[in-house]
Image (cartoon, rainbow, N blue to C red; front, top):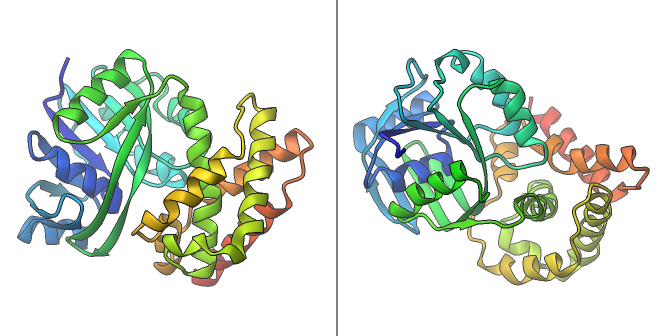
Length: 297
């Protein structure tokens, strides 16, 4: 089966970027905030940076139907998933493939709980950045998408590849989920607390904090059966200078929105408690982000 159309639920910076690339060969409908959807409807979606251009797609602020053979690409934040699916869960058909692209741990379990047997669940890991500049305008820094190696994931991967998206079908998808989480546990809260662009986190003054976050995550991951090493810190450090975007958590804090901290550092802290593993640095970062969230309310 291939897909007749794509619906992007939660079309902010990342979702709009996926939608734009897929729209080059497929019918795409973006579902997002009114001002952003209105701007795209009237003048198209303008992307600068990678994949620069203006893209035309259908837009709406809510889903009223999900036709057969639809790929539902979900990019709402993890903490908004339950609320986002309340009005549409009964619209999901047996042949609807629902692709979850959220940051954090426990996304697949949450997806299964929400859908309760409806549709086909695929989870992915996004390894690129995008900035929401203003309604109708996005800055993209493209990378790739990790997907599993099961049949549904491979089908999505082929569909993505046909539209120029780079896909890696992972032999150890859960380990790749954890690698992304570890990086996010460093980059997202630090950039949000310091209100700094991602590339600036390469600063040697932050070295001990970054290493402590990674070490705590590795220890908790090992207790969960995920075996990582400090090589992930070296990879992150070497890639930081090339990150041109602001982290999603920084964008959320600046816009007064709730962040995904509970699915990142907060989840590491919870798992650490379950396994009696101290996670003081992750806990401090989580508490600071929650403070910033409360201040913006």
